[in-house]
Amino acid sequence: MTWPCVKGTIILKAGNPQEEDGALDYAAGILKNGGVVAFPTETVYGLGANALDPQAVEKIYRAKMRPADNPLIVHVTGMEQVKELVRFIPGEAAVLAGHFWPGPLTMIFNKKNLVPDITTGGLPTVAVRVPAHPLALKLIARAGIPLAAPSANLSGRPSPTTAEHVLEDMAGRIAAILDGGPCSVGVESTVLSLLSSPPVLLRPGGVTLEKLKDVLQTEIRDLTAGQTVDFKGTPPSPGMKYRHYAPRAPLYLVEGEGPEQKRRLAALSENFTRQGYRVGLILFEESEGLFSAPVVKVLSSRREPHLAAERLFAVLRCMDSLDVDVIVAEGLHEQEMGRAVMNRLRKAATKIIKAT
Ligand code: TXA
Ligand code: MG
Image (tube, rainbow, N blue to C red):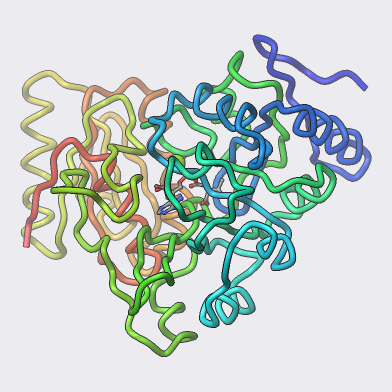
């Protein structure tokens, strides 16, 4: 089998059963030998390596240019593998695993010594999840090792939801990409810590806070509400203090709902246009037609935030490829998947305007 190759990075197509077996074998071989392979999950593409091999994990940090204190999520096939990595599984974690695994929920546990410090950015805790993408599960099983995998973007850039996005950032930096087509959820997993009481939401994501509360029937402390990257002191999750998900053009996020939000969006967009900038607008369907600009991308209806999540990172990358000078984005309510969408937009933003 010959696979296409860009700057030394092999693209392993796994779109049909014939291609899949050979692609998985090749990818698993690289992983077993301490190499790095990007692979699809239901949320975004991950940059995988053997979580228990410090040298393999070091290659992930280097490929991503990721700060060494930002820990990685370890991907496993199920509870049996979790038990090998962590000291103790709180009852609530077992309940949530039963409901949401495989799926976009990451939980924080106290780690065993077997998990190297580099994987956890020096923390005594480890983040673990069971991804729901069949290729991810098959790859972990075939490699026979837990896979440390951050999102497969260069640090600070929008997360990749297609193999093409991974290639934009990683060609020549990693051995291979397992191409399983576009990701369905579109934003990363929810990160939850059950190590304190009440449990703490560290990153909103594919499993909504509402669903977690429904299952646990307890309060969950949301440390991410209204969060920007301007963190005072030590953040509870290292990822919280870094600017993320950012397209190259500066992004102005206009938060709020109703007429004041629309007025501010129009004023900003007109101002930039008058100054000679090529403006890219990110809007919801309900506002389409109210504004015009050289580039307009619609995420979804305001009533379907899960569709906005699915499209968000692709739209941010698209703004780069369409060469806009400045992006003006419309904010959304912070309920259900709207919470994850707003979290990512805030972290991508250069400036946030509160129009409420
Ligand atoms: O959906 C996802 O979670 C994707 C796919 C590939 O699985 N992965 C992902 O990884 O988003 P990454 O590295 O981009 O984000 C991991 C987040 C970071 O914000 C990091 O700070 C946090 O999880 N994290 C990891 N280990 C932690 C720990 N021990 N304590 C607190 N936060 C942790
Ligand atoms: Mg990431």
